[in-house]
Image (tube, rainbow, N blue to C red):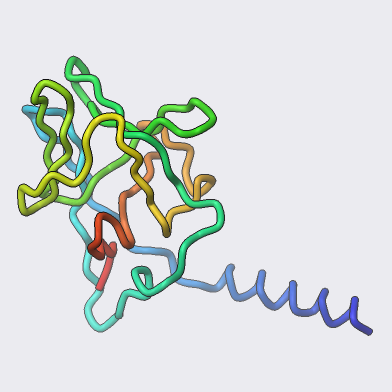
Amino acid sequence: MLITSLMMLGFAVLACAACAPPLPRAEISTDETTGLRTYERVLTAGEPSPLCHLGKRIDQLAGHLEADDDASVDPVRIRLADGRSVVIVWPKGFTIGFEPTAVLYDENSRPVAREGELVEFPQIGVHDQRGTFEDPYIASGFLFGRCYALFD
């Protein structure tokens, strides 16, 4: 009986996930000067964002900020514990400066991370994307003490 109940619950969860509406797209642009890619939130009117109210993911994305000031695109990446260097698309308004090491600034020109520092993305799972140019992680959710929801 217990196994049957668990199987039915599993099918219900899968069915619910398949029917869920897709998340809105993030409009990605590249800064011509620095090569930093950012996204502009696509707002969905009347649809509140639950993202920043969720807890931390068990498999959360986290790694150390690394930079390459010679890179023409994606000069800032995150180095994961397994050694992979992954691509992040940052919220619109974020910028990068090299002073001489990299400093990541938020949309208010406030420094939020420096090269070598640990950056955590509590609501992004390490397996959500591949972290490549074609399938980058979108820096969203609760980040640097603020909410960067893809939609409101």
